[in-house]
Length: 611
Image (cartoon, rainbow, N blue to C red; front, side, top):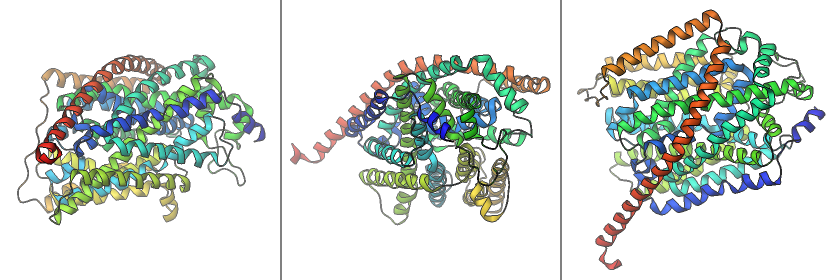
């Protein structure tokens, strides 16, 4: 382990790179200070006045979903599952494109003009469902992001060579969370989307360049041969029950693709911030490339990190002290290096001086863009969908200023919790599986309510309320919970079972306890016959393609094509969104300045004494 520790410390990170990393995040703080004066009401704070253009919408959704936590847990999946993990990325890209093509769920939500999903619960069902929905969303979401800070900080201490210093991780965690809290509290969604745009530009080109350097370092053919040599067929075929995944997991990941873009609050918040329902559809169709690549490239980095580790005996001994594949559990007295460190250690050795600072700064920006969006989302949900409705039930009203202040208080409280939870949680789940199952506490019930509430007139408030409660059963998928009660069930099975359970409860509760007057459903976008036929043909074509790949065992060929095409599409998207997003920011600021000027004029008119 001593030789491995010395190897880990010897990265290309220098004082110049530290200067880049420390200076870059301060840009976000200045953005928060600048836009603070443009925030005049709670709508500006929560959804940026619903004035985002398509390109800025793509940039901010990508900036949120392509966070450092995403890069880390995806690299971990690539490290442990090889190219077989690519099926998760492909499912995310395909599902997001279909959502954009059809407008499923998101079009109707945006057309209703709601600012949050629980607000939809009240309009469609009743106030108590909104309050419970807000509590469930915040609880599941805050628990879900509990490891973001820790895992993001692990990247920084890994890439800089500080992974062997015991106090490095908590110090970095504290610094990062304080920085995020400052600028998120200042500017709300406006500072978030502008910071996300900057992060998109830096990180997009950083991802592409780093991927090229990783291929150059290992050699294209050598990467695939190494995975074949060490992992065998399980490194390419996700359907093998003897591998990391299997059919049950594949189905779960297909559903997760739908959830991550059309139900998860931080993604939906971007849809609800768009300037029209039609813009939402275009946003999702273009962003499908980002949803593909946000998994695909980090998976590939994780695979390259695996090849790197297996190449050097000291690292192999550190990460696999009991041999590869590692036994479960490890023999008594043997402890392996956390595999989350593998990818940042790899990058720390292959990226040159200067570039490693820029890439790390981009990753810090990715970390911040995810945290700001999540903190803002959960804080405003607690304000808008829990506290404000409770006040209204008691005949009182929260002013816009009070809502903004309360949201800022919640942002700070949640941030402190995230710091605490990251320091104490000791679960052994893969980070992606931890996030999927904690998120399921919220999204299984939310999916049932959105599906039933938007498309089934008979869905009742009682059925909705019970379905939200049924989603709590997803907590059984957490490893510490299973250990405490003495069970062992795959998290994918728990998630799929919870989905079925919540849908059953919604239907049964609605039929047994119907509302007196079923409410009218919102309108759906009109789909032309060409789109319908194209969608059907495309889905059957994909089914045929995957059937052939499975039958002929051509998984390696498929993943090579997916990687090349995906990276090419993302390169084109990065250039387009960089230009278009800049123009959208100019239009957004112009709109906010006009609103601010109007608000000031109205204030002077109401109070002549200020003249």
